[in-house]
Amino acid sequence: MFYKKFLLKVYRKMNKYTEAAQLKDPHYIDKVNEFRNQSYQNGAVVFLGDSITEQGDWSNVKLPVPVYNFGISGDTSYGVLMRIDQVINIQPSAVVLTIGVNDLQRGFTPERVSENTFETVNKLIDAGVNKVFIQTVLPVIESKLQSGIKNSTIRQLNSLNAKILFKLHSGFLYCTEVFEDDERSLRAEFTDDGLHLNKAGYDAWYEFLDNFLPRF
Image (cartoon, rainbow, N blue to C red):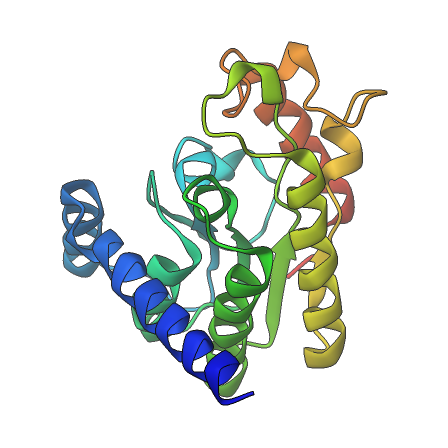
């Protein structure tokens, strides 16, 4: 038992070390500085996440309040957690978070990603953000990717996140059904590289959010 506990502590320390490497990524640093130097209106909706968020034009979602894109290409659940104070400081009315695929591609477990997500959502709620939504991590086309990521692992992460949000009484936006084909992979017409979305993919996402994201 002692040996198992020791190994668990070592594993967590190693994960913390490798997770922290994200904070040294040049694009991450540039975007964090960019966010810091911009001005914002209170009461906005913030879309938060990685490249799939950064590459979206979320102003296409019909919302009656300002919309800000806090996506950073390559970001992870740990990277989001470490910069969540930037989001809190602009006092948004809602945050829509989509994160985790980069963690999985780098070998982190769904459990670890979900732990970081829990901390992030908890911080937002504690800071008075009344509406926090997690969107499902989208499926991929496994054969097009070299990372070895599996859709079964993505589904496991989505399931863990759904349980977290139930505990925290936050919103869960199950957008997977829009993007899955009959084999539960990302629909080919929505992507060029098997991971990121093309215009057709984003258009389908905007339509989904128009229908399912509550009004503010």
